[in-house]
Image 1 (cartoon, helix red, strand yellow):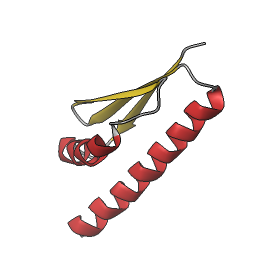
Image 2 (cartoon, rainbow, N blue to C red; image 1 turned 90 degrees about the horizontal axis):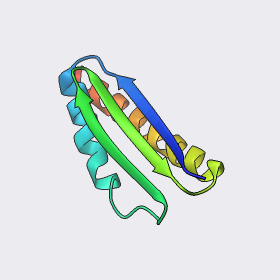
Image 3 (spheres, helix red, strand yellow; image 1 turned 30 degrees about the horizontal axis):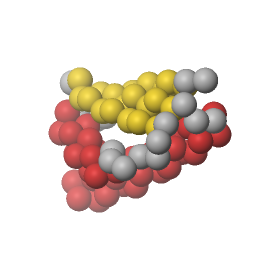
Image 4 (cartoon, rainbow, N blue to C red; image 1 turned 90 degrees about the vertical axis):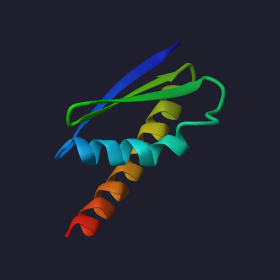
Length: 82
């Protein structure tokens, strides 16, 4: 079974979306077979598409880790801007 997930993260502005995008790029390589991720920026939105032919638990684990990374990045951006 193939699972697909589209995650749209609405950011404060385009610059924040781009900063998160660039920070996540190194994580967007060397996925295990059966997992893939692509990202795009549209205005203030960071759009992340995740495809998995693995189990739903694997997909959920990947999304959980991704959201943890985004949360950390947003915290760093806030500290740098203040």
